[in-house]
Structure formats: C-alpha cells, structure tokens
Image (tube, rainbow, N blue to C red; front, side):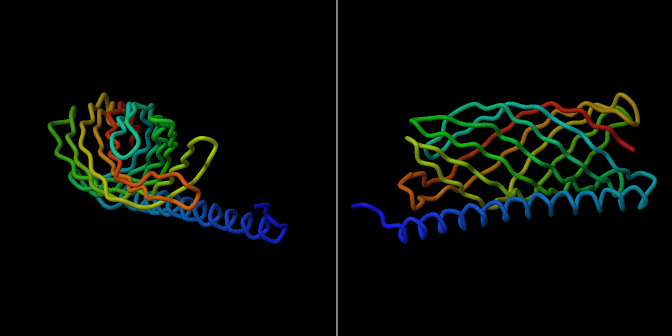
Length: 208
C-alpha cells in the first residue's frame, strides 16, 4: 500500500521526535555528569590537604556479551574527578564503547557516567580503588538497512589501581562492568535483552 503525503509526514515527524528526544536525553545525561563532576572536582581541591582534582583519559578493550551481541570492541574514555580526602572521591566520564557486530546486527554505544570512588593508598606509589555509579547511555542499532536508537541509564561498577610516578602523574589500570537493557522497537529490529559490557583499560591520570 502506498503511503500518502499525510502518512509520510506523520511517520517522518514521529521518527524525528523520537530521535530528538533520545538525543536530548543523552546530552542531558552527559552534561549532568560532566557538570557535577567538574563542580565537585573544584570543590574537592579545597576540602582537604589529602584531597585534590584530576583529569585523564583511557583506552581499553571491551567484551560485549548478551542479547544479539557478542563481540570485542575498542573503548575510549575521558574523565574528570575530585578526591575529598585520601579515601573518598567522585568521578565523571564520557565513554565511547565502539561498535559491536553479530548476526547482522550492529550497535554503536556511547554514554556519560558519574561514580562514587573509594581509594585505599599504599604509600605514595600505589592507590587501589573501587567505584559504583550511574551510566547514561545511547545505542544506535542497525540491521538489514533498518536503524533505531535507544537510550537508558543503568548502574555500573569497577575497580583498579593507580601507579603513581609522581604527585602529578599516574598510570591507571582498570576493570569496569556495565549492563545495557535493550528492548524491541517499532521498526522491526528485535533486540530485546540485557547486554553486559566488560571493559579492561589502561589510562593516564594528571593530578592538580
């Protein structure tokens, strides 16, 4: 059956509204995480002599497993954080989880996060840390010419170590686990299920 101009206009407007809503949610989540992290980063630098602020970046390998996706990806992350003292801090980050392919499906996953950090220092040379926080994510899914974008927010957790070369420079080794809940959509791509994204990364931290 041919689509009338009115039907086409309605379908186009519906798709545009859906994509606009998803983009707004994604940008709001990322902006919120970065703004809160930056504000607390500045506050942390004045709270305690044992606290301080830091920025950094990391590259890692991600393993995507669950639902219709089973693949390995390259992951990039930029982060900003603040330590209120030598044991407690907060960190905001922007993530690019790369693209996962399987059974004709492709998912490109990005997001922003905000996490509470716990540190255990071992002298001046090593910090062990754990984190728990919230990820605001967006997934662009493609299958046989069909496209769909989904977004959501999930809890995540991680742990790692900072190897301190000096008071200003450290090497970070980290493991994180994220869960992404995908649902069936209106354009015929059946992608229901929970997908685990495990990320092992190495990064550089600059402290102030």
